[in-house]
Image 1 (cartoon, rainbow, N blue to C red):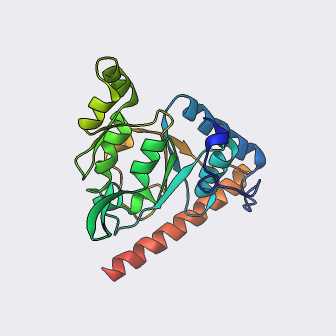
Image 2: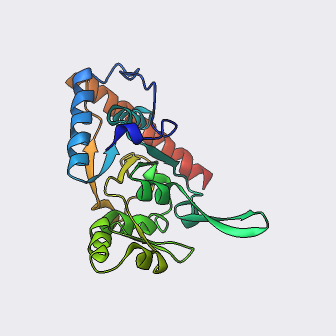
Image 3: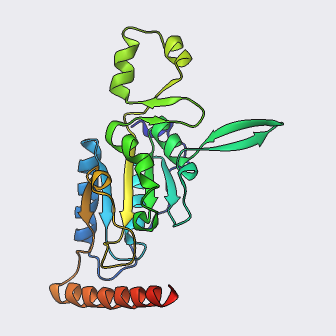
Length: 237
C-alpha cells in the first residue's frame, strides 16, 4: 500500500501504543498484530473474537495505524439494514442520487472495513456482504456491479476501460480487507453467524493475555456477566 497516498483523515492516528487493560500483556498484543499482518499479506479477512470491551476495536485501529491503512468503521446494531451496507438514496439539487456507504467505499478504494458488533446484526442482513467477502463482487442499488480485481483485469485484456464503464462494472481494489469484531455466542447474547458467512473469515481468539489464574478469573467474571445479561433479556421479553 502506498502510505504517502493515504488520506490522513481516514487513517487512525494517536492510537495509544498499549491498551489500558492490565490483563493484556505487550507480548499478547504483538502476537495479535503479527497474526493480523500475516492475514493481510495473504489477502484474508479477519474476525476478532473476545469479551465485550474496547480491546478488539483498539487492535483493529492500531493495525490500521501501524500499516498506515485507510479504514471505514461501521458499528452494527439490531437496527442495521441492507441499505446501511450498500448505498443510500439522497436528494441533491433536486435530483435523487445514490451515495456509496462504508463497505462500498472501502472495497473501491482499498480500505480496511471494520465491522464492530457482528453478533448484534440481524441474521438476514449480513448475507448481503457474503458475496463481497467470498468473491469480491456485489451488485449495487444504482445498477452498477463491483467486480473481483482479477476478473476485471482479465476483461481489460479484451475490452477497453470505456467499454467496461458502459457495462457499469467497477473494479474492487486488491487491498480491500475486512476486520469483523464480535463476542462469542451463545456465551453472550447475540445472533450466531451463518456457517457460510463465518467461513469467509480467519478467526482469532483475543481473550489470551496474562497469567493462567487471571484468565480463569476473567472467564468466570465474563460468564457471570453473560448469564446476568441473558436473564435480564429474558425478563424484558
